[in-house]
Image (cartoon, rainbow, N blue to C red; front, side):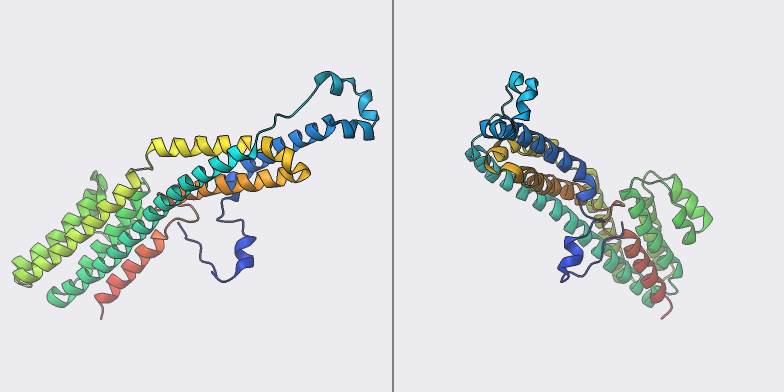
Length: 307
């Protein structure tokens, strides 16, 4: 995920953007709503007595009279009430997705800070800690791959000796396996007398914090929005958007297709945006920049052992 960097003060670049927006995903559905509305608008106008009087040639098409086409009329009050209820549902949906996104970013921020602290204490109290820095760098990469359901651990070969890499690759959870190697590093230094018991306990707490953040990210990744909500929201949006043309063709005439398309864009768009960010660890344009965060951790861990 290469999170999109943008100038938050520049309206133009955001209003006319296409890459990273919901347009790519919802354009076909929005176009369908606009097309349905356009067809209904044409039928309504063609079936009106004034139109038939103005364009006598239409009477030559016998099928227009024989079909007796008419567009059912829905009262706007129904969509006004439903729109309010749907608005509250969409607000809940957006908040739930955004909370998961921000929570995910918080966990990766905590991973970054904890890795820095672990390597810093290891280097100062029991240096050299080059091997610890490499273990920590591999650990966050393993978390990244786990959160993407990707078993390709090729990146880890840059940081791990062959024997360790083989054990990590065969493990059910590579990151959990690496947390044990980090713990063993701390234990080994204590056995050698390089760090005292108190410092070892501080480092153990930091390892525990790493594992807590790993588990919290796995929780977000493996627990989607409950199906009962996801289904309700999609059904509600579909009913609202596809019945809206029956209101608009009677009240907005030729502007109806544009208005229906705009409503469809808002409702479908909010839902698609929520779907994209509720699992923020993937490779979609608005997901978290995990590659950059892992690279930052590796750089800082390496620098801490060289100061």
